[in-house]
Length: 437
Image 1 (cartoon, one colour):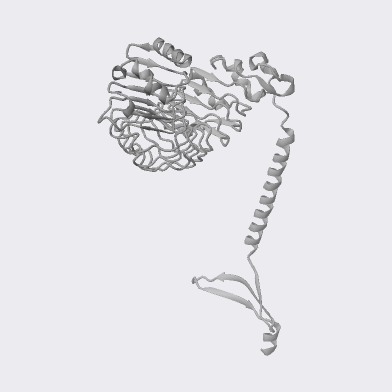
Image 2: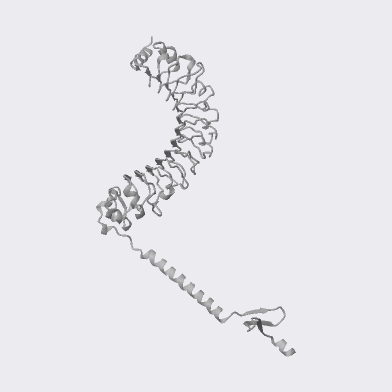
């Protein structure tokens, strides 16, 4: 026996515990495992087999006996394929094949021989398609991760329909530009959905029972119409197109407890209009760190007061008269300890709480106010003049002149109403008609 194999076997023995075999990071190839190591113990009794961080390029169940196996971890290997072919049915409940080189899932991999599978991790592979048959046998699957695969728009709209028991779905960073309205149609038990870091610009039609949603890193810029009454946590971090958030857009999220807006570098306005006491009644944690906010509007006061944890760090705060209410209000959850001023220069790098209220001054508004005032006055004068001309003309009576071609002018003047309600039109004939008389 070579020294290398002896070392592997020695390490192997030290990682056998009860019904678990852990061979993490031993540099094993499939030949080492199937031809040498499995001869030392009865794998038929093993329930948890951990082969993480080795050099497997494939895994075939026919080479061993895995009748009791419930957990199989083949993550961080070099897998290009895996198969379950040689037993009618396995007890496998957890399968982790993440961080491998899988480009396609063969029909003999996730087949009807592993119907008890509840957790499947396919993240960080090279998958480019998820068709309608790939997951069709996983009737009781509860957790599925396809994160960090170059799938793009390669998910068939029926791909998830068999997964009616699914609770957690991770589609992070799969380069998808659009999620079909039919994609999540059957996922009535889904509670956690991660759509982050995909170049989508609109929020797709989502399962109504969601409790946690992550749309961080997307191109979404509008939040209106989001109706998820059971949602408890909403992550919207690092969203480059998000410039304005009105909390009223989230009014249908009546169970929301956690709202995170960290790293939205173009977020310049965070507001509410008008405030209603029923808005976000269960909000407990609000994080708006590292954004582009310069001020906190007074209308936010009541919501911020009743939110247990509020984080406002690393924004370019402008500490002027609009921020006085934060210092004045003693029940503002010490927000002034979170706010470090960037503007004006005299308050730069100071905490808001360190600045006396009388020093929180706004710049003179004359340069803005007076031009606006004079413009309004000018428009008002112009309107008065036009109205005066209109009424003068109307009061004096109208006069219209019709000039007929190659003929003299005929002028029509006032219309006079007679006592018998008939109308008599006075005409002033032209000079040519008078001469004829």
